[in-house]
Length: 165
Image (cartoon, rainbow, N blue to C red):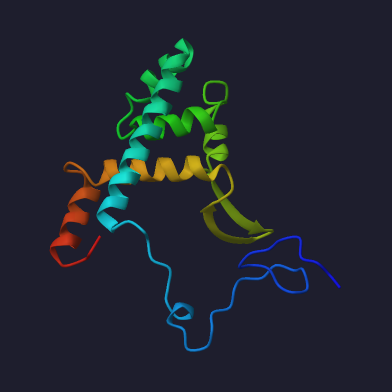
């Protein structure tokens, strides 16, 4: 006879583990998991944790004089804030050592044209470091949609016509 090394609601008679099965007709089997905190309290907890993480990131950037100087230079660019700056510093250590085209390729922003012989396909961006691409995309769209640029005017006209975002 096999003895179960694990005893509890997840144990089976044969010694394997499996989730407990509720009895037939039990509402527990049909219910979905619910958060133990109401959504507003959960949002407050997450906001507090995010603020603490952002403070840790700022402290890590300020801890090194060279990194702090690089961050100060990067943050002078339009649309680049502390979050984007931290991503660039952490995920692109080659930032000062490579040329612009090489950095664009590392960030996944350099266009690649799919072609073979005389056939030319479409250009697309791919590869690279996804966190860098995402951070720069967010910074670019937030900057482009502010102010009186052509993009901002187009965005505002779409919003006026009822586009959600």
